[in-house]
Length: 127
Image 1 (cartoon, rainbow, N blue to C red):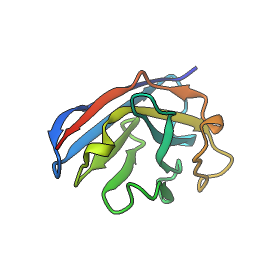
Image 2 (image 1 turned 135 degrees about the horizontal axis):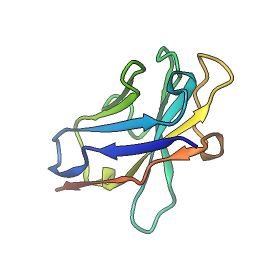
Image 3 (image 1 turned 90 degrees about the horizontal axis):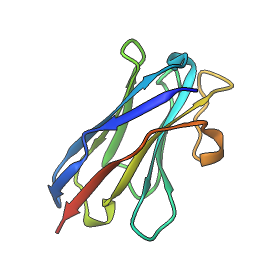
């Protein structure tokens, strides 16, 4: 099983930016579709964004479109989430997820498609 470790979370004021990183190991990372999910206190975990293993296709939740950007560096086994114009409602634990992809362009927004999960990193946006 693959191992994913997130970092980069923290406390930021509304309107600010954060960059999350996810380091992957133990898998053939370059053939894995990757995603970010988040879970706010008292709520279910929800999809944020995903990227194909080629890096050419991405998908975003409507709530983060235009503000968040996912990217990956297959040479470094890293996935990134650049978060700009943060809002208090973005406050949550953010999880990195990975799953085997059927093609280089596959992106997945459902949790069932992912087999590997990180431990999560807390993002808190103050108003």
